[in-house]
Image 1 (spheres, rainbow, N blue to C red):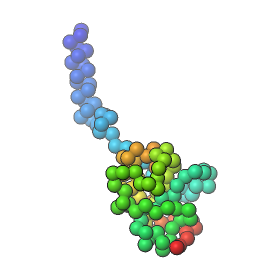
Image 2 (spheres, helix red, strand yellow):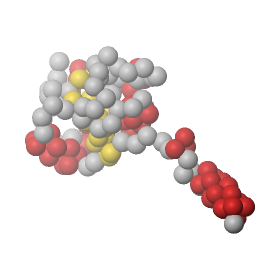
Image 3 (cartoon, rainbow, N blue to C red):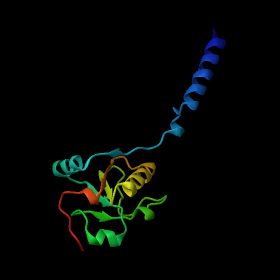
Image 4 (cartoon, one colour):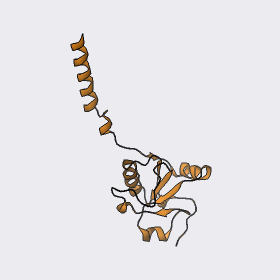
Length: 131
């Protein structure tokens, strides 16, 4: 009976590892929402950060009021100094939605827990400001 359980556990462990169930193979995740949902979140919550991950020149042309700019290409392996709290809600956008997904995944991989990606400013129907 002991041999049966040993073989069973070995087989089960192998199946889990090969099917991607290992905790080491899990990729950190973020949440993607439609822009209307992002607007609702902004209306109903406090203490969040709106993160624009476009280049500074793009940010200066037009951005969502209250947003901060941390370009996607500057988000590498270390926590951005502008984002010191890994538990804080961070709403991420870019121009079209590509860089925001990349940045959201990088932040999630760094251990940020509350990342919400909502696409690009090209389709944003809310208010914008320019510098």
